[in-house]
Each structure stands twice: as structure tokens, then as C-alpha cells.
Length: 139
Image (cartoon, rainbow, N blue to C red; front, side, top):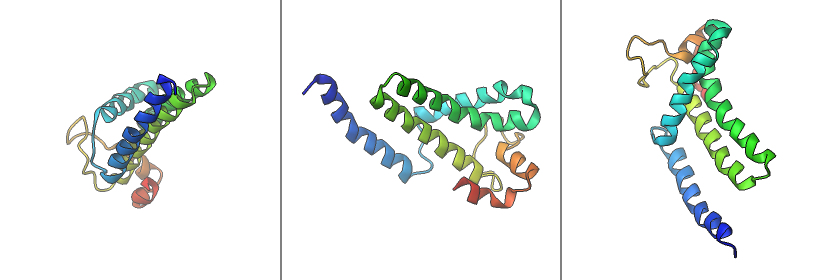
């Protein structure tokens, strides 16, 4: 057995443990979430030229696009294990976005701008006349 295979096999239980931890506790927050938040905020700037709806949606969209781009990179390089690991990052981003969408009416999540900040998904779902469906869309 090659050392590379040993490392991969040893990492699998850690990955499973991490996935179960994430899925078992919606409030769980770690370094990956901090990275997702930074990318989310950068997305607002990247999509700013598209106007208010684009700017607002851009945070969540960019938060998913960036790790997905890494998955594509590793797939093209035929590094399947790396692509699989980074796919878990895409999953955490999607989970974060789903939680954020589901919070649109309740607005219980702390936002970076404080109490005066407009909740992205409250704004978008209100604009699209979908606010009563926030939890359904989040699921």
C-alpha cells in the first residue's frame, strides 16, 4: 500500500466525522464557515455591477461558485480525491446558504453589519414575492 493511499484511507473517517458533525448541528461554525463568509462578502463586490438584485444575490452565489470552481479544476486535472474533498466544501457552502435563506423571515442570524443591515434573502424573497416560502426554499 502506498503512503498516499494510507493517508487517503486514514482521512476518510475524519471526513465522515466532520460531515456528521456538520449535518447534526446546524449552528456548528468553524474555519470553513469563516472562509465561506469572506467569499460571500467578496461576492457582493464582484456582482455589484449587476445592480441591487445582482449585488444581493452575488454573495450567496459567489460562495458556491468559488469552491465549485476548485472542484472543476481538480476534476480536469484528474485528481478525483481532491475533487471529492473540495466537493465537501461546496456542500458546506450550500448548507450555509440554505440556513441563510431559511432565516429570511425570522432574521435571527447575526449579520456582519449589525442590526441595521438588510438580510440578503429577506430582500430577495420579498422582491420575488416568495418570502412566505423561505423555509421551503431553504430546505
